[in-house]
Length: 207
Length: 396
Picture 1 (cartoon, rainbow over the protein chains, first blue to last red):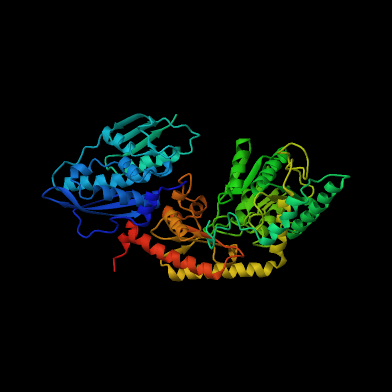
Picture 2 (picture 1 turned 60 degrees about the vertical axis):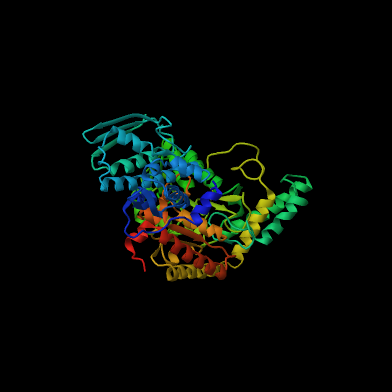
């Protein structure tokens, strides 16, 4: 398994790394238990709504650091609306690709940027706190990468059913028992959904 | 690999000693024959093999007839564990292993389980040691095998083999004692007679011998079901051909390690003590995994470095020309935290931040100094980037 030169460059010489004093918004995603965590800090120009400054901290592997570096680089100087369009696929492309088992790192970096922007907008009355719904769950599932191929489980049609009833989440996945990634994926789904206070219980079913 | 590289991953494989390469050479060029009877070419090889077998058997207190060559430690483990299972299943179908054992043992235990055996998985204490009292409690009338890893492959813990022997011999029926000695052979004294071992796997490339050759000790009188079928060239258990050159290299490597065993071990112990002392002195908030001192094999140091992740550390060291290993999930193909560290009660962060240094007799103090200096710098840099560090440490 090899990293591209761009990944190595951003890992060894990360852009925008470090804690920011008095940021306008921050967000932290991931958890030490999963082995990766990213914090993003934003400074926003209120006149033209551009990202004036951005920085990150990362606990994680080389691709974690490199993807956080590239995502912050892509967002710097953009308007919030432009930055909202940045996805993990953009980060991947800008880094000349990542090994499939490492794609989830780019999702974490892009996700943290989006949460930071969302936190800014909510704090400044630009948007409401979104209601938790079935769509929220599907959006979270789109962030779960199947490590064997480096694509998300929704695009790969691995999600058969999503249900939400009074805080109880029910997910049917089309992943066989002999699949070595099955437990990883279930664990990651729980990690993504447990952060919502609306979620009381998560049930994941396999064939 | 660039010359001058510092290699501290000797638990995986080691650099072949120059004398080993020399000992192998004639079997590629002049004596490229196979064993055989009544012809001088075959008889020459018969004699050489007998000598090599004797040399290696001696180092573990066995007789030459009890040693079978095979392609490596993993095959030796398979031949022994499955072989014992096949041969003695009529006497019972219960095996005992521990959760911290080498994957060879755990996967073979799982195989036995799939084929109708019950397996008891013993826990280990916080230093990775399996308690002989737990072993005694796990023994049942149908127990036929107990297997253990003499030196733990992750944290270097030495298992109390002599105490295991007492427990097994006190049982009121025969329980076969299989030992994986991949990490232990050449690092700690192992006498199969004194330790009551029935089968034991050893490997050449862990002791500066060539890759691709190992041996299985099988006590006289112990039966093994046949795993591999085919033409008998050397030994009954791994049928087919083996490289004579590799066997010659194996014997030379064993001869070198055991020529001055005590001095070599004392030197390794001094080096690893020095490494640990320097790590603890130069890198704050670092923690040793596994036992301190005599309870661990002399070539292994495993530490967790708080707030940072092992794959990133390993890669940065690699760019500085230093090879080490980590227990981080991110560096593993399966994205899972190291099972040995988790089994001894470490948390995910400790496992992700764990670094394993395994030394050899070719390791020098200068190399260790260079490694500690590089690691101190890298830890400082990665901690500056870490939200976990930043949350608990004010910037100066």
